[in-house]
Length: 181
Image 1 (cartoon, rainbow, N blue to C red):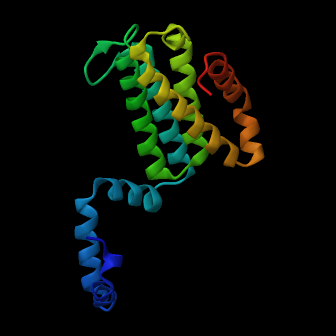
Image 2 (cartoon, helix red, strand yellow; image 1 turned 45 degrees about the vertical axis):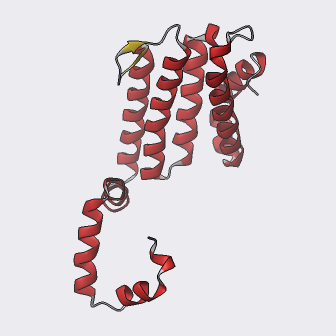
Image 3 (tube, rainbow, N blue to C red; image 1 turned 45 degrees about the horizontal axis):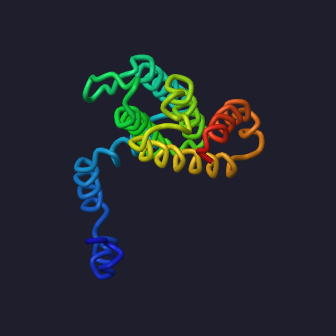
């Protein structure tokens, strides 16, 4: 149950002595891994650490696509729509976690564009218009990823958009050519 649905509990917590609040906060943070990662980043890391995180994320994405395998199942994805979709989802999950922790929109969009461009570059025949019925789920998923990425890109400051423009145009060009927009 949410705290905002119980205003009397919220008031009681806010009126606790500071020492008790601190104890509760530390206990609660320890129970939520994502919250722990977010607080670690916000409280203990700086711009250099953010750049390191971005570099490590890009390395993980590169390895994921270079292997051409789903790291969870360790199976090739060269000709299988389901496995390519799984690979893209896995890569997107890495980016989702990065964004939740850092709240860095630029690196999030940069990595999302990278994921789509790698999928398009490495597995172009899986996106052909004459593809079989089993590819519809992959195409629908990728269409949604393209739309989401485009929307987020458009919300970036124009200077940041300029830095990503070339890779964004590459992604959109392929998507339009293959009916994914």
